[in-house]
Image (cartoon, rainbow, N blue to C red; front, side, top):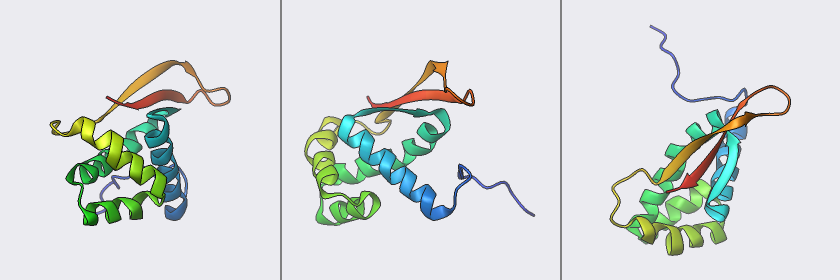
Amino acid sequence: MAYTKKARTFGRPTNQRKALLRSLARSLVIHERISTTEAKAKALRPFVERLVTYAKKNTLASRRLTKTHIGDDVVVKKLFDSIAPRYATRAGGYTRIVKRTERGTNDARKLAYIAFV
């Protein structure tokens, strides 16, 4: 039987979708709060929370895994040195999605903020 696919595709091929998530994750780590569409924020949440969990372990292997997912040394350093120690005792749920009331300019898409708790 054909079951519904779980991942959001955003109408893009796989490589573009991965690049989108990487760039959103980079922006979130650098700015610690970004504004995007609600669907992209919901897709970004498990991606970023996995990275923070890797960073909490603070091993060479987890640093290399994070580097392969993000691809930027400066972002990996910030993630390991300043963001992960904040959540050392927290078991999960490192991000928060807050829906915005105003809509997008062209197609009335739902907008949201995603930020670290």
